[in-house]
Amino acid sequence: MSSDSGFPINDLKRRPLQTGIVVTTLTLSVASTLFLLLFSSRLGGGIASSTSAFTIGLNNIFSQFITFIGVLVFLVGAVLTSFIIFLMMTQRTRDFGLIKAAGCPSSLVGGYFMTELLLVTSVSCLLGILFGLLADFMAANVVFGGYMLGNWWSALVVFFVFFGLALFFGLQPLLKVAKMSAIDALSLVSYYGLVVEGKHRALSHSALTWRLASRGIMRRISPIVRVVILLATVFVLLTVSVAGGLIAKDTTTAWINQASEDGPIVIAYKGMGEQYELLLSNFRGATEHGDFNYSDPKLALPNSVVAQIRGLSSVAAADFRLVLYETVKEVNNYTVIDGGNVVIGSDRVGTSLIIGLDPQIMSRNFSSKGRSLSNDGALEAVVGDSISQTLYYPDPSKRISVSDPLMERIQIRNFIFDIVGVAITPLNNAYVTYVPLEQLMGATGVSSPNMILVTIEASVDRGAAISDIQTAINLVDQDLEVIDLSSTINRNKLFLNSTWQTIMFVPLVTLVSAGMCFVGYIMLTLDERRQEFAVLRSVGAKPRIILRISAIESAIVLLSSLGVGLSFGVILTLMILMSNPLVTVMTLLTIVVWLGCALAAMFLCSLYPAVKLSKTPILDIP
Image (cartoon, rainbow, N blue to C red; front, side, top):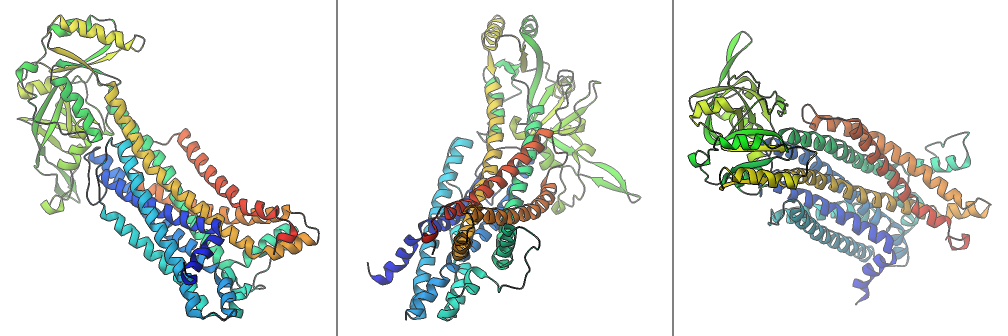
């Protein structure tokens, strides 16, 4: 290898820790941005969705949350990239001066450092793309149970964006130092963005350590401002992701839990039970419901099944249901606004899974908005949130300016039901309408339910109870089967939790990047002050004074950044939260612990360079 091409590589190898921090920080920034972009497309939040998982309401929540997180991750990545590349190239200021003083032309020196910049940027961006694709592959297999190539062009976009940012911010200090003379480049006033001393007074009447730490901060206004902006942006991201993510996770999980039965068992004829289980699996993007005839008279349950089920002591409750697939129609309404009648909604038509159930059995409120069905035999309905988003929403293109399902009605065949609630349910991705069983049978002419949801007593053995139920129904008809839905419901809940955890994992990667960037900054500032610390050590100061000064400076920077980031983070969190969020004391404690651990981890990591320097003998400090 020639000296021209070998110098940049040898120069990078001469600083393995600093070079590793730069490469790792830029790599993680690229990888986290690409992963979030690819993962959002799998949830339906990207330009092209590759899955039909979740309900429309949940997808809207995920899309809104991912949009905010994605913007913040990109901003943090951009600030990280600019700062870490700026530190890397600014570190070469004195090297530039030394090489120029030795007689090397400025163009040749600039070419050396430009090669370093291109090499570090290219390697980091390529590694970031590789790790981003690998993370997307792992998440797709863990969360969705399989991998499908998504928006591959996103990798090219992310690569060129971060490559351009790194070059832009890296060239700024490089071009600046190229115009300096060798004497100016070697001056400490120009090193690391220092300002001339004497413009700021240190804290008076304070201990020596505080005065030195204060002076160190005052001398570095330019890099300090950059670090505070960087860390404040990181803490904004952490606040939004941790606080907003935990609250949204608890709220959406509560919605799914209240709309899901507690470990039910389905009793139905062969085909009907599997179809109902498939409808629950659609929540995970499994498959469509297919062409299934729910109205087939052969699926009607005989009356003798009722006696067999109610005679079992292990059965806590039996919910008889009629499941149909029907065409439904929006029935509009009117309201008075500013003294005039305004039409609410229109007469849009769609299809929906219709669930006829006994309101007494489902007496608990399973609606996320409004209320559940009453027991007075009224023509009432609770629609899934996907139905409310497809049939009952404002549509300016159709001149529908006002629409609200709770103020409208729904028509099933020739019967009109008042909508009293909206539920987020995993069943058929919330393309479902719940109505009273008796009223549905009257509207459709079907005389018997076609399935039973059985809840088993908690005190009995589940396996033995299922066996007893199967034996009992076999006495009625050998074609009746029993299907345990508990595993399917648990997989749906696990899928929802895994999705939230995956999204909230991305900011942790960004936190690691920011922490490494902050450590890199502390290393550079301590390196610039090595002579100052050597003088202090030589006049009798103990080695731990270096650690104390660095700890005070780090604490001031981190606490300032936390105050700014937490303030803006809380504001953004309140903006993106859904209506009626579930906030518990445990959630608040978890948020405080997460943010406290993040702050403590960054503070402790920032002390590593000071600990290392404090253990260095005086004669080894240049």
